[in-house]
Length: 197
Image 1 (cartoon, rainbow, N blue to C red):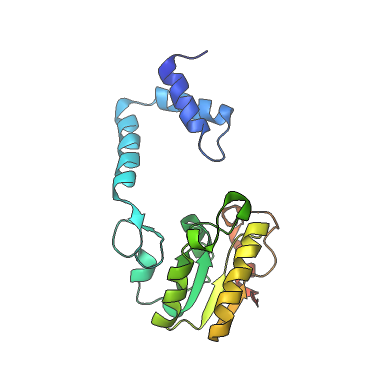
Image 2 (cartoon, helix red, strand yellow):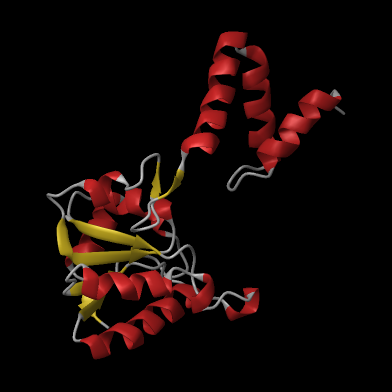
């Protein structure tokens, strides 16, 4: 229907999460209509990000340095650790301006159907951080899904015997939803009203 280079870009955009065929077409034609300088700036930004971004050596957040900005911030409370599934969940929680601890990114959630168990996640690194960093509370901020709940229960069972308080975000987040779709007020209330697992 479209010329091959146009169709190729539509197909690539359509592979992105949350982008349907119509949105992919709109993005493609927007890029087709911008000047070459803007198109080059966009492609350079994508290539630069892919070349420079890596995982933080401590929490597995995305960073261009050895440590991410949260881990490198000495003003953060190292005794409270918030465990999230994905790096983008950190930005959502940070948007509430109510959490001043540190994070640990699991890299997903336990999902037996997809063959993802604790060994495929950053669970060992989480457990290693607890004693080393003097953590007294772990906030489990996994998504309120079956997999997120299973992951939260696994974390609670592994950590509670160590005498560390394990809490979970309070209700207010929709069941079956993702953190990145929650508004800051709802997520802020969930953080404030977290409960022990």
